[in-house]
Image (cartoon, rainbow, N blue to C red; front, side):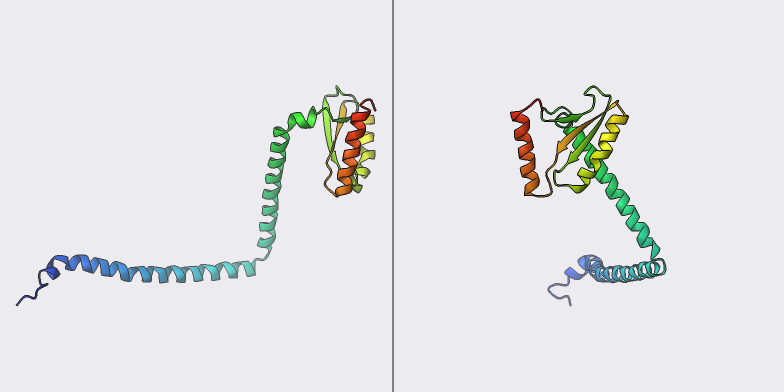
Length: 162
């Protein structure tokens, strides 16, 4: 005797079997992935503990990549601001204005290192007449730096021949 749903079983048995096997396979695959992950993590951990110098190599590679990225950003910044850097009307120039080589010095009036570099820059201009130096005020250290820059700009506007 066939039940009310007897027709259902022969026609859909294969589909139900596939569906059931798929549903039971997902947790098994997930379990294998978790086991694989645990094993891989163990192998990596063991390797790093046995070879800690690789961390130094990794750090060096990271620093090199970061330096290349910073250099690329700086090159892009110079390219995007060439006219402002080299041809600004507010440029402080030392050396022959027609010199073929240009050194751009960004400085802060309150920067100790900027002040120390002035002697080297002066020697460079004196010893290399083919070099001109453009000074760019870059007040980043403090509010006093910003105020010193404002005074410098005001003096340059008031006495442009200085």
